[in-house]
Amino acid sequence: MRRVQLETALVTLLCFSSSIAIDRQLSGSPPIKIGVVGPLTGRARIFGEIHKRSIELATKELNEKQPPGVKGRNLELVFEDDQSNPARSKQAVEKLATDPNVLAILGPVNSSCAQADLQAAQKRKLPLITSLVTRTDLTDEYAKIAQKSPKEPRYFFQTAVSDRVRTDALVNFIKRQMYPDNIASLKIFVERDSYGEGLRQDFDQLLKQSDARPEVSYGSYGPGFGEAEQPIKDKETRTIRKSFEVS
Image: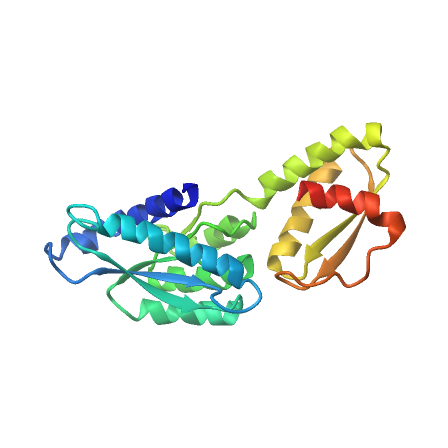
């Protein structure tokens, strides 16, 4: 329910952010199209399915109101499957941008895809609202792009809690547990993609600023739900379990 409420707010926000374009057409005009970009197939399809279903429920809720949709116009969703592939995601944004009736895009789901989509959203002047992307530095990356056209409005909106906030909670947990549990080292597994690299950078930076100084080593696994590169050794089980409990 909370996810549906969130997506309802996002759909409404994105429609009213384009209210000037909506006002140009009278009530009873064709539906307002909203693009949805995410992994409907591939390694992260479970997240893409959650994204898709929640947006569908939010749209159904809005369309069943009286008057329906936004200003009497129903909402129509246009889905594009990026398969968690940045190149495909950028192509999806470009494709949706060619339809003048698509007023904004919800998505993508993956941080690596969002990185690829920033430039396209700005160039096409098409609002891109991400509710699942968490990489901390994406907003800064977009700011650099937006600086090239300072008179233009913003076209990228990241609404999820950033990785910096989550890794700060992890570092604070480690600080509380280090001494009573005698934690001297940690083995942390991260994905081999933009999302995993962003988490690692945030964690390293915050850990250096804290009083906790455990020895940290990293393992990696394939994006999505791939297996770790190396099997977990028995002697590492305790510290690895700690990191997994926090994540």
